[in-house]
Length: 171
Image (cartoon, rainbow, N blue to C red; front, side, top):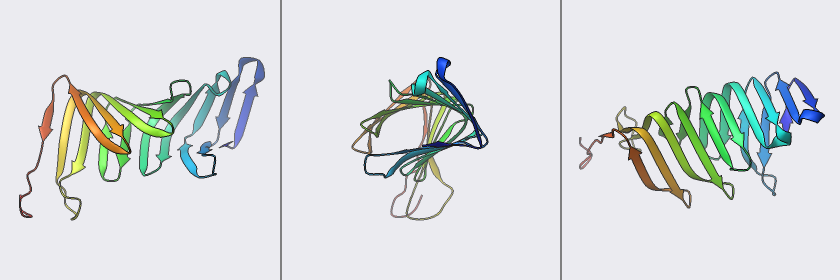
């Protein structure tokens, strides 16, 4: 379902332009919301094979949330590309970089690639509120996900890790 204040469609070009705070909502076969995309402008190309959200983009997918200034979705690859200051949050974990690519398979996130100034942060201790975060930095960080859990992390280029050791509740 795609809504907005104003929409134009050119059938011969298979192109649509949606203005005025468009919202794209995708539900699964049971009607449960899978993903929701908010932006100032959306463009649909090739009859829906590629979609572009522009300006103040917010994406909500399950427990995850993303913000950026431009996002492109490629239906054939089941790939979402976040550009222009992208940030992704899942619970208290945070991902950022120049570009973030998310790959889906059977409606589940399978891989995340963060390129250029890649940064992953996670809280040291999730049971208490504090401002200490473990950090992983690199030129390119790839996260592999299986069964909704992080399976493997690969850092390419210069890799830096800041890891806080917590022992018996003390740093």
